[in-house]
Amino acid sequence: MPSDNLIGTWAGNLRGSKTSLHLRTNHQVIFEADAATVSSNGYAWNRMEGNGDPLWEVWGTYEHHLVRSGTGWKVDGFGFRATHERGNPWVKMTPGQ
Image (cartoon, rainbow, N blue to C red; front, side, top):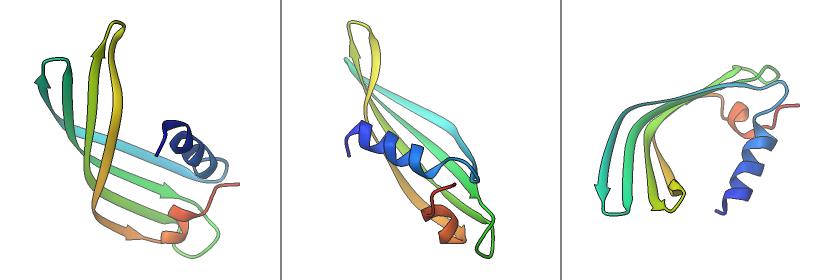
């Protein structure tokens, strides 16, 4: 997904009446010349009143790929693999108002 689409999706979903917390930990970095891979563990929750249980949580792993340019390191791709989630999927999928 192009970065502008991803940012637009996040901006549309994480606003107004929805609150969220996103954490990453245990970063491991592997360098390969002018590229690097950063792996980490992630946890996030979203909370929004209005349709039953107001909480949705997810755990998983991130992998970010970076490249070195003349102006420094830039992220050129990343992925998140969910390993567990619980709570109300309505909270995850419904934009805040």
